[in-house]
Amino acid sequence: MTSLEMELKALIIESLNLEDVTIDDIDSDEALFVDGLGLDSIDALELGVALQKKYGVKVDTKTENVRTHFASVRNLAAFVQRSLGNN
Image 1 (cartoon, rainbow, N blue to C red):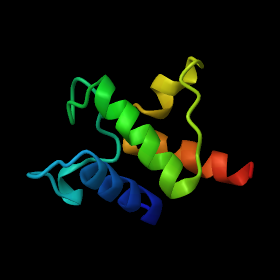
Image 2: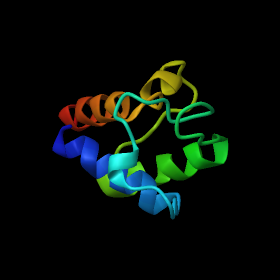
Image 3: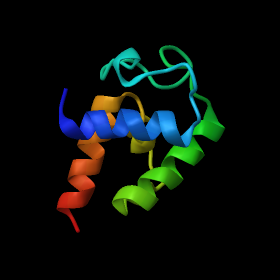
Image 4: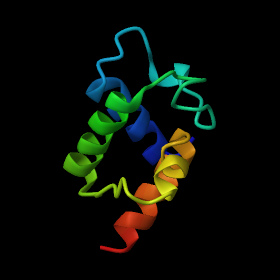
């Protein structure tokens, strides 16, 4: 697990107020939505805002890639790294 993945797991827990979830409970390859962690569309919006605040990353919800970016913590970490590399 990379340090960015750990940061993202902590961000997910904190920004979505997941009280009974720890960093170790979230598998980096596990689905974040529906199956897996069970997040929903409201959680996606809140997570997008949290990513923008913490990393300055803007999530374009109009692209088809958004589902891929938010599929797992590992995908989210790759998206953040690519976005930060473009700044």
